[in-house]
Image (cartoon, rainbow, N blue to C red; front, side, top):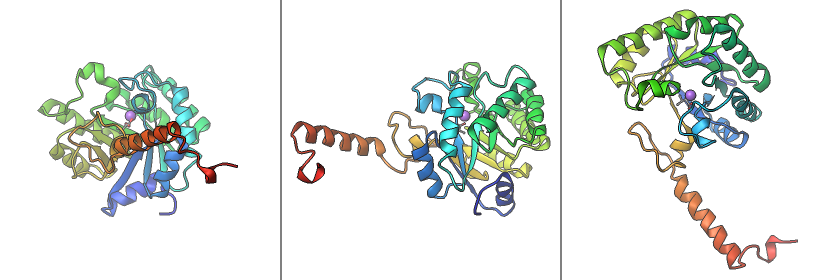
Amino acid sequence: YKRITTKSLIEMKANGEKISMLTAYDYTMAKIVDTAGIDVILVGDSASNVMAGHETTLPITLDQMIYHASSVVRAIERALVVVDLPFGSYQSDPKEALRSAIRIMKESGGHAVKLEGGKEIKDSIKKILNAGIPVMGHLGLTPQSIYKFGTYTVRAKEEEEALKLMEDAKLLEKLGCFAIVIEKVPADLAEKVAKSISIPVIGIGAGGGVDGQVLVIHDMLGMNNEFSPRFLRRYMNLYEGMTTAISQYVADVKSSDFPNANEQY
Ligand code: KIV
Ligand code: NA
């Protein structure tokens, strides 16, 4: 694929090719992620945690999401860019949801939006889709509802919530969503859902039986050494690497080792 579209992702699922997705929130990081060959870049509202240091995803605003998304869009040549609709920008009513989605598309140049929830937000999803804006769903542990859940532990372990998840996934497919993120549910359930629908299921903490995987880039690069859920694989220890580099710089400045004769005019 020269350029990933929502159609490419549905084709990948049909062909049994797994989909790779990572978050990015800024130009420099997005350029690296895109060049490395990622299929989908998510401008996640996890920016609220990772970029701004908030405890939850709730405080981030639509304007802030647009700032992050426009920075990412300027960097990419191949990846599909999906942008989270932040908390408070789509829950009141479908018109507000559409207005927010339109702002993201116009002002950031992103290619699709993601909303958390199933049946509860079906009219909003319909309205956005009717405007020609592709929608990615998000089910399971939906962090914008953290105060309802009260905990970040695994969702849908009980029959009732598992059944609702399956119904919601089928509904999102029927409405016309091009993919669904499923977060932190038992692997068996996520696999069952993925096998029941023809649009891709992209998992985070949802096992290997789904159609693709997503992680927060700062977590998989090991920049965040305080966050170690079981589902996270760390591909680097950037926390250590960066701390060492920065301490060395401090020491070199203090000792007048930096700059040397070749590093000045
Ligand atoms: O905001 C985010 O990073 C997300 C992913 C964890 C799926 O929604
Ligand atoms: Na998110």
